[in-house]
Length: 336
DNA sequence: TAGGCCATCTGGTCCT
DNA sequence: AGGACCAGATGGCCTA
Image (cartoon, rainbow, N blue to C red; front, side, top):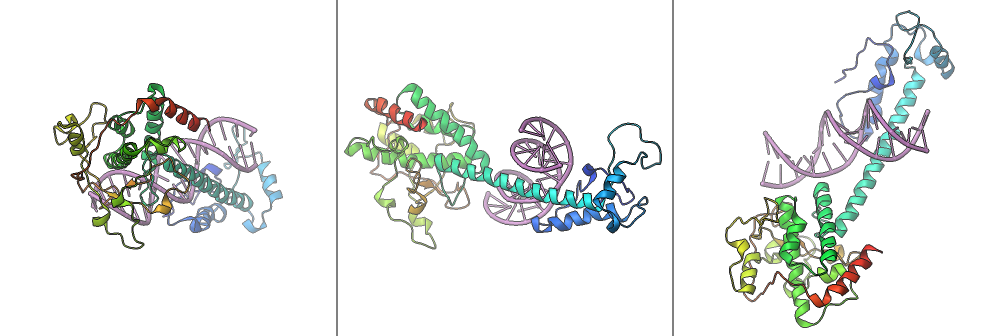
């Protein structure tokens, strides 16, 4: 709906196109500006010549007038420039160009956010974290890595997850927790056989790609059967299985750790799906190579994980003998 | 249908 | 003057 005043002949630039409904995307930009500009050039009472006759030179002459719109001598304050056709055209072009620049600027910002998504835990092309969650997770991730450097040893997984998930939404918390569980499990498998490979990225040494045989087969192209790709296991069960005691975190169904945000829930309400190999390993060998994926909805909360009966899952997986090497690795990352 | 997230447009402000 | 940056407004899309 057009709400601009039609009876005002003289308008400042700031009055142009102030608020009007947006009827579509940029293709209609021109149309909108045209609609907005029409009354300014064709409904004036003070316009003595047709707009077509006006030129840039005439516009400049008008600017030199010494009387305001009421015929009174102009005394002070900024001059109000009449909106001639030339000026309107110029404004239109400037606005269109500014919109294009702004779009490009926002695209650049989004590209940077995408790059950030790739280097924080739980990167997935198919299920992107929201902008705000990406920023929060990145902040937590930086802080958690800084803590590792400061303390000089690998944290236990629970603490690490708690630190990562501070302030995150419940779905994102579940997603991150799911990612870290898988990779911690892989970490343990790597430890049991041989020492860690220090030539690898420090991120990979902390969260190496998950190579569970159960998940090693990439999903077929096309339809993905979640019932086959979901590999549930329960965080608390794993804890109890390893420590042969009841996890303090799991004593109540809705345990909330003192270190965790109020919404923190470690009962494993998430599901997992193997990402396509192409999404990983290309550029980000230090990232999360397997991600929690929803079985329903974007950040699914509908399936409960259960630990396979033969699995063991220790929270505390740090190796003191590796702390110095790990510090070197992390330093290398931060200084590259 | 409400709410979250997002892209885009827009005008204001600051800086060069 | 013009570009960068910012925040508010708006409407579309998606999901619970």
